[in-house]
Length: 367
Image (tube, rainbow, N blue to C red):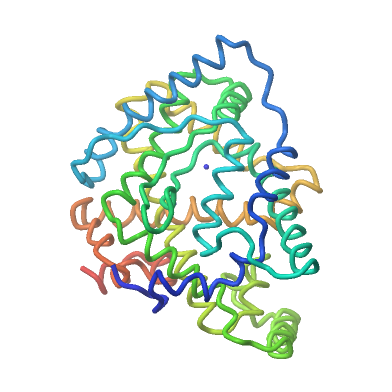
């Protein structure tokens, strides 16, 4: 609304392998994104302060039921969530992206390289500004940097206020419902610290160009176009921007993308499962919230917004929620939550792409 080192890279190597990190002026990206972010919905000081206080309390209150349902309890003290506005989310997102891509501030030499870093920063900032008006919350496992990673739960209060008004639901219930989802992500990563390494290693492999020549990329793109014309590409690999991205990647990058997509599908589906499992006991109006929220997800967007959302992967994200929840629901229904939690053992016990669609295959392989 998120063990084994699959990328084969140690943390100390990432700065050299992730050329993306040094190609973006992250401070410029944060500044541009903050300026371009849409104004918050009009609210009184009382409403704003009440929402901030209630979201902070809801994030604390959600922790215990989430731990009880998931059986993931690292025993640590419940950390405070950070309640922020849209520009603050943009700044937090750029810091996280900087860590994920192994980049400090741009070290590019010369005016041309510096200009390119600012252009990339402006593009990144514009994308984050668009996203900042829609995201309700986020657990950032990379907060604090790779060396001092502490993780942080962020809740974007203007967006929570805007959506609860749009859905015409009880604010206190909706705020707790949102927190159930985001706190699940916090529990996932805090109970399984290797997940953040798995994610960052996959990102390292995904953004490593491996010295590829432009001609090789263009050749693969041509093969993709021909396959599309002949109807040979599979539905999973040909849909929208993901299919195009896979088309221009070498095999190591494709495998890294698959790992990230599967992990995202699992994390989001698990959080959706937990929301529904916990919801009736602690959120009195959960049925109404779920129905109206799902209707909102499915409603048609204006053409330009649909194009932007597709390019930014929003449709793929919604697909992750749906497919991931079906997978988790089916596995938990067949073997129970305790045996399902074998999935968090290491990278080898995570589902393979085909197993997301056929949960029994994961059960047969892992359990």
